[in-house]
Image (cartoon, rainbow, N blue to C red; front, side, top):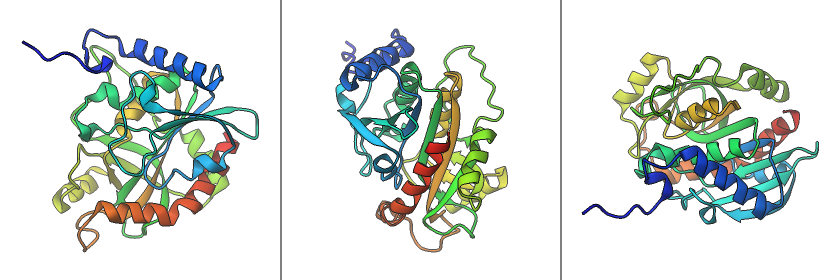
Length: 277
């Protein structure tokens, strides 16, 4: 006898877009905001931006909204915030990211992105803390994502769904970001499955493929965002040099410390970029 299905997105008979629509309706009811214009998924080190981009008018526990799970990772606050920007637009800040390595399946990983699209969002900002392959990138360096390599072996697309990923990370939005900070560098992000950190050999493989950044999120979310018709800006905070590039062992404590040390600077940077979108 099979175990009962505990989560709606775990049922293969359920339409994940219908669950996203229900979630968007629940967010509208709980926040009093009918639709949002911009959504931000704030990864490790980026959370301070939520306090700087505008006035928070409502905060909801994400786990109380259909389809969302309680974050498994320290550094993710587990809330959804509706923020009124200075220009009058509405931002939905997602502090509840489900990572692929948690083993819940791709539908749950991209649920927040699909919910944002169902809530009216046209611009999706995806951020993360990641390892850098370029030795010139020191911990605390923000980097624009120009493209990605999906090394998870998975996709949020189901069936014969063919989506063009050319200019997935919008060149237009990257230019806006560089107009705010001309020193911003950019690179190709490689999403590994995790949760183990990459081996030095895997980092060299990513480098040989043309990768510059390694991490465990973002690529699957970006694919789902493109499927939903949103324009995407991706940014990584380099929290450490990748294995083999950095000569000391990697640790999650190091990632959190780098994020904490950089959060005021990168939070201010992201807030200034959001105003221009």
